[in-house]
Image (tube, rainbow, N blue to C red):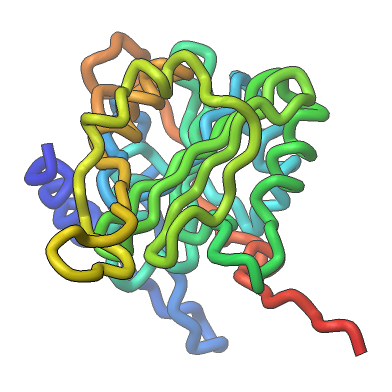
Length: 251
């Protein structure tokens, strides 16, 4: 499946044309718009799952800038492209009643000294949509997370990074319990002392994040296996307000 994503990325680079805008000498990205079938994603990625078929409403609620039509191939390829992934997010056409917003620039909790921009975003979305979910899986930096707001209530939020647990709110859900702590990968040991060792640091795996997504909504890695009409979504720039920002210390 990882190979498939890499192939999609390469195909998208070939399809996306860098056009020189007249007079302004600016390079702009043109995305393929021809409707196509859903394309899988999930590894090394973050995404929102919003229970709604109102794609335009999701874009408006998130404040995504300059949204332009883009099919699945262009959208997924863009969010995995080294040059474009830090700037753009892909808003999918609805699949089984869910709209996905995928991209690296989503507002991730990064530590206690930084402002939590994820929780307010999810709560704001929940004012318009009944079920809003967040997932993140970046093993190269040991960042994994998931959160869910249902009918305006924060049901669960958990994010772990290199320094340990960053966010832990709400009770374990039934789907999390089914994952089983024993299935978590052992990544390291904190404060090791002698042969006995110290506190064990356990991290989720990418597979567990995807399995949890399957329990709460849809596993995006299997989205190409679902029956869906050919359709196109939108690509837009992530709002500047999503960028990580340190807490201001009181004078």
